[in-house]
Length: 277
Image 1 (tube, helix red, strand yellow):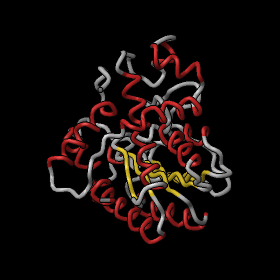
Image 2 (cartoon, one colour; image 1 turned 180 degrees about the horizontal axis):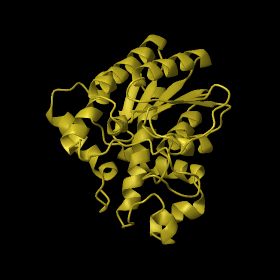
Image 3 (cartoon, helix red, strand yellow; image 1 turned 45 degrees about the vertical axis):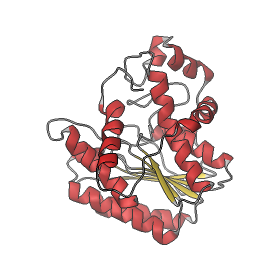
Image 4 (cartoon, helix red, strand yellow; image 1 turned 180 degrees about the vertical axis):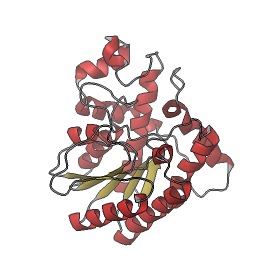
């Protein structure tokens, strides 16, 4: 049930799901509805009760709309579904037989404990990390290749058990790296090299029970080429395969505009599905 607020973040998942179902692809689309109740419980742990209640009811409005959307009664269902998809994917990897699973939702990495930000209502990556920890994962990696920095996720996870390594093309939501964390800034000329460096940093950080991969396609909005983004997805998929890491991907950012139609954007996000399928 989509929110009435029409925006790429609220619409592209359905467009991509239709392409996967109708096209030639070995990926299978599964309804994560059975994980909704658990997602609600985990959201309540990750976010403050006041903020969760605001999103559910629309009041107070400044909290309910703090991510930048106009609130409507369908919005709570949509934003919980984003997290439910990630909880379902984490469960398939840690409890099932799949080494890789994904959610056709975003990682929503800007949301904080007590408010939304940057079109992110509930932080799906933090919710997924909580689900993974609950299922016995002791050490996690958040690999965030969205164009923007993921300061919300870093504020909601514990560096003692969650390492965060990013390549960003925008300083929005910048955070300070320490320990095994890394925040690498990139431009179209050095993007692939910085992704390679990020994977090398992850190798130096040691073993992980699961990788949460925020596969943003909004570097395309910063003029990173589709060819480089396709290479990036193959690099990450091959890296995780060689290391034997379980991995959960989320679509993350990607926006239509003068240079990108919805069809273009869906094709970019399908690069992720194809690489991991």
